[in-house]
Image (cartoon, rainbow, N blue to C red; front, side):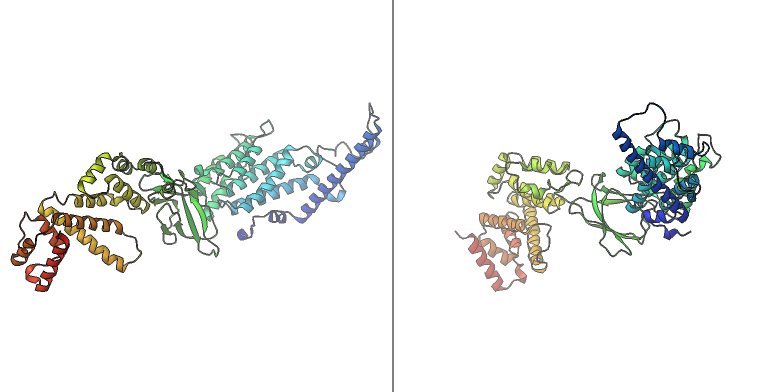
Length: 545
């Protein structure tokens, strides 16, 4: 009934109060304030005379005492005009209407975390709290009976908790702690139950659940939080206490978490959520987060983080939030998670520029805990280099293995391709051992490097500027090593001429076979005389002293 007319504002709450009650309550409030001002002025005048009286009252007090009969004088009553009517009824109606309006806002915006609704209900809660705890003339005059005031406090507290369900809002928690601080004989069991229920709703499911807004959910909430609270644990006169548990029918799990596929641990990831009818920018959140209820429909979810691979989900095709949603994300190499490095100050790209005097192992340990990467850095990159440097110099390439491993590790981690580290090592090791390998193995290695060179030559021409699995610098380095090997081994003119005549390469002619493959020398029966002469000249130019 008039569901869409419920607005999360203090003005809407005021509009629900009948005009006659609002006017009478306003006159009561103004009369008390003016009377309090006159009383303060009189106290100042009498205090200036400094003539204390030992007995009796002053004339003003005596006159007021004579005008009021003993039956009419009650605690909290002050003289009001007769047209204000039944002051007790006005106080009761005003408190009930305000509490009922707050309860309606709580149902209408349940689970949304709407700040306007929470502010409007919070203001009324503070008003009720002032009436309960303060003893100034205004609070005493406007205070309804204690049971009614406690019921209105409990109803408004539950309304605020329904709006902020599952959010764990600290300001709301502080307000609830102020409400439940008082504990004496005047506070009944039902009041404690209402405040405890409100705190429980605020942390519903440990911050993983919220309240639904379907008609069935609203019916369950009305049934569970019906604002008639018991006076004791066995009081079932106005509301069956077992029905208080019906709120569980309206609980919805709306937690959104992200899990790293490599470690299996929950991580913090920034996301963007797009709505169907929203014309503004997407909502930016950080997982883990509780997805609150909204009047608009969620359409798309995107993971927007430079530390993780992008992820996009279409939320229209599938209802993904019936039991929460788990995003499986994969972290890029060279970065720590948002929990370990909130300001992104420990990434490899940041530390590489200030790593002077720092070993590769120390640098890698500062941002990754992968045991494979750490073992690689420890045994191949950070060993002091004596053994590997002597091995490199023995091969004659002048490039230490430890330096080579450090360079390719940095390249693979910054390029997010650490899985090809074995490929780099295999190619480097194969080229280094060509001279010691058997004939068939050496020729196969030459074929592999030649295919890589040919592929990257064409790839560089066709897809200029695209990312490559193996860096062009490394391919050029391999080609340089093979050219050096060819020059060092040499090929005799007689061996090359014999090949063109017979088409046979003996097993002991390893250097000849490598030369034929590396320089793409054609078979004798498919070569013209000019091609034969060209390759003879190439061999003579390469290997002549």
